[in-house]
Amino acid sequence: MVIEDENPYLLLTPGPLSTTPTVKRVMMRDWCTWDDDYNVDVVQVIRKQLVELAGGSPDAHTAVLMQGSGTFSVESVIGSVIPADGKLLVLANGAYGQRLAKIADRLKIALIVEDSGDLSPPNSAKLRQTLLDDPTITHVTLVHGETTTGMLNPLETIAPIVKEAGRVLIVDAMCTFGGVPLDVTQLGIDFVISSANKCIQGVPGFGFIVASRKALEATEGRARSLSLDLFDQWKTMESGNGGKWRYTSPTHTVRAFAQALKELQEEGGIAARCARYTESQRVLSEGMVELGFPSLLPKEVQSPIITAFPFPDDPGFEFKQLYEDLKGRGFVIYPGKVTDRDTFRIGTIGNVNADDIRRLLEAIKEARS
Ligand SMILES: *Cc1c(COP(=O)(O)O)cnc(C)c1O
Image (tube, rainbow, N blue to C red; front, side, top):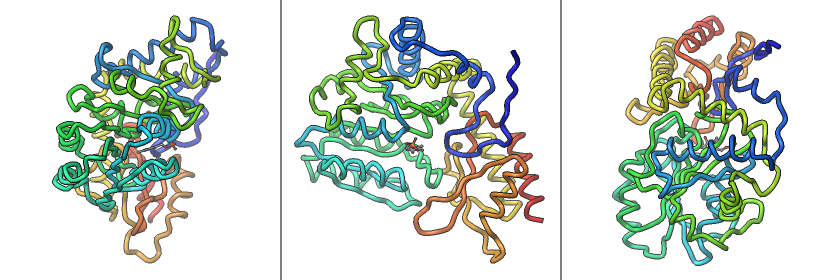
């Protein structure tokens, strides 16, 4: 049976994104959650591969899968690893950094937020001082790629500061993991979080955490939620032959994810995928300048994942109209989220390449003429 790709348009969004027909096709089969064909052959293989992709080693690192969208995994980590007398420092520069703070606040975790504003990376001198001044801070968290603006935060300068100060580091790498290289061993990241429907190019339904075994082992009994208990989920996934989830798992999504990981490998791994995204982003930002839409961010901090464009001065410009026009021409773009100005965003992740972006630029040109 040949299944045609039925997509009427490409998703140029930060996930869910356009997946390959082969990823979608493996969902055409039902799986039993307690059979080894699923647990050992699918889930355990995924967990092992995630540790490898993160630059971890099987002795020092482990991976836990968690039901729900990416935010559920973030909430699982924040709610499960910070002890009752702990304190979290959040480095925020956009809506997703603010969401980290909101989760901690809702869970009544002691919290400090250092917000550098949407357009600036975290201030490392200030971070060093804050950690020095407040020894009660136990954990530090930040977003790797801030999807609000498309900014890539400088983990390679932030992580060593947190590690030298002896604090636990939690990174929301939701929209970058698998698309931008990141090495948990080299950076000493204790918990890194992402989800199935971003740069691994799977479909939505679960998130995952790559954790330092030592850091995770220390968290027993800390969870503030039953279903989001990271330690319990991990213990269950490790027990017996392994690969069991505590509650019903998104079997179809998990199968799609396994296929997506295979395709990531076939593409040449994270470096090759990053090169494809980077080329698409370059074609996009250069082409958009020519069409009168310079990017919000300077090149140095722009990620290859998603690009934000301020609305043009043109008083006749209406985002909704551009959106509908482009949708009719086969492209779905994304509204903005920057707090103090109007922007729209275009993602360059998923099963999308530079030629698709060239076609998009043609479509924008036609829509605007
Ligand atoms: C997508 C994303 C999330 C999670 O969003 P969900 O809608 O819960 O999947 C969290 N952080 C960042 C940076 C993201 O891009």
